[in-house]
Image 1 (cartoon, rainbow, N blue to C red):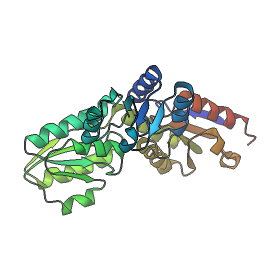
Image 2: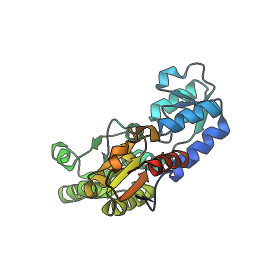
Image 3: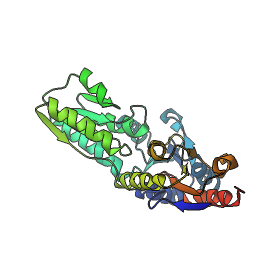
Image 4: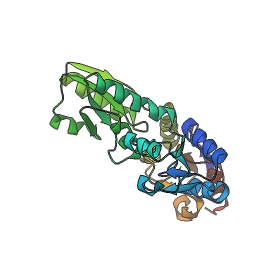
Length: 276
């Protein structure tokens, strides 16, 4: 069986930056998981004593706090400042961008529409920077129920599919007088999704590697399944099953933006040793 990696996959700029910050800081705590990859989080804890606080209320006694790649709500950042915690900001610059846009446009009187998952930490943070009316939608069908003013500004969660964002934008433009559109989908997301799409078209089986709570990884799985029904999402080589590869000739592998190379190498090694 031939094993082929996607043209673009794995660690994005923002995640690489956050990992370097955590490794150089050491003996610190992150507010929420630094990235959506449990294996890498455990490595940082073991080798660099980087702990994870699941909630801002657990910050008592913390001297150094690393802001996760997804960012945190504006009020939580203020809370850390009031507690005199040494703040190390590892928020991805691509996430900081929609935060600033929402803050600016809401001050100028625009209603804000955020395309994304309202429960995702990135969206929670972005939403907190809007001082006026702000709505979070995941599907174009949700827009009809919104009561928006004539002036609307729309941004996207950085890891969403561009095709779906276009649907949101198209609806808003056709229903409202003034719509400011800010394409805040990360370039790495575009590239990884395109590469997964192309590889899945020529594969008998696809393995998508990444955190199961990672938005961009789940998008890769969804795209892969469109063209290759035998597509699987795993976090480590321990989840691989030999039966997935029986009778297959072409195995494609892609990985989410929070997946380090050392995990991908282990997965390739184990697949290579399967007798299929």
